Amino acid sequence: MDTRNAAGSFFQQLPLLTRFEGVAETASYTPLPEGWVLAVADIVGSTKAIAEGRYKTVNMAGASVISALLNGMDMKDYPFVFGGDGAIVALPGALEEQATQILAAVRDWVSAELQLELRVALVPLIDIREAGLDVRVARFGASDHVSYAMFSGGGVSWAEEQMKSGRYRIDRKADTHPDLTGLSCRWDPIAAQNGDVVSIIAKPVSEATMPEFRALVAAIIAVTAEQNRDGHPVPVEGPPLRFRAGNIDAETAAAPPGQRLRARLSGLTQALLAVLLYKFNLSMGRFNARDYAREVAENSDFRKFDDGLKMTVDVDDAHRRRLEVLLADAEAKGICHYGMHRQDSALMTCFVLTPMSKDHVHFIDGGNGGYALAARDLAMKLDAEQTARTR
Image (cartoon, rainbow, N blue to C red; front, side):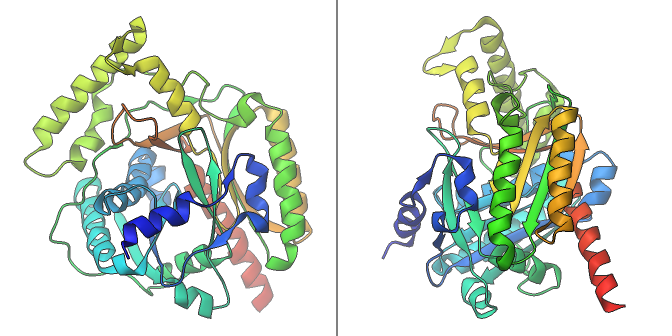
């Protein structure tokens, strides 16, 4: 069997959810096929890097895992999720050796070029299921052109915990450069329009609390739906398009050694041309910069489900307070644990194979720590709870 075709048929043949509320429903999910593995990665010390103002670099490192694996597998249909300072990609077990090489390569690239430490691991699905958990996948249509994977079952969280404890880690030295074609971070921070950009991570306490947790998710979505674009931090016309030479630095570093001057010149030329086309509303062949910017807004993943709710939303003060009350009340009742981080902007990291296609994907995070600091908030609460239990 052609594993690539099989993988493509698995994800693309899942039912397409068009209402985000459906991501909290158990019936929306399908178990991963037997024999698959999870590629798991995160940045060690991301909080320190963010405190140093390197949140854009942290996001680039997290997205590089997705870019390298999808490029290296020569397709884009494997389920993945971007976590701000890390990522998850589900792959058929037949690709485990290839994935090991790619993960080692992207880990070494992040170390050499971004001066960050990236943990990488491959966790077999069979081990997750033997631990009494599962990895189930749903497909949510962010737009007419892009769908994102949602994960449930507890297996992703377990895999991340195992990696952090040292299990399944990939330690081999890479002998290749990762293929990071299409990875970019050219956009300026996107300023909040309503008041605050809020990054939220909320996880159910247990399977027993899932009915109440689903009701919580619905309530949170209802609150954000009262804001323009459901709280989407990217304006409907797209993010601001400006020419800044420094925005090309990271993608220049993503090019293989020996090709970086050409990559930088190409990136600068493309960025300048896009700004001019946007400003004067001109087209070049089939490419129209303003249409592309609108597609960027439509295709962005500002909310997701990854063993719990994750969202980065633009809300005013009153709605932010309502979200805090909902989450704090649910936490007090033992329904969920949550972390939240406020900032004044959002960030976008992109994976664009060609601007001529409409299936370019764009990862949204908070502009000053986002998911990484919300996760730290959540972890501190869990540590405090664990300490209280052992006393």
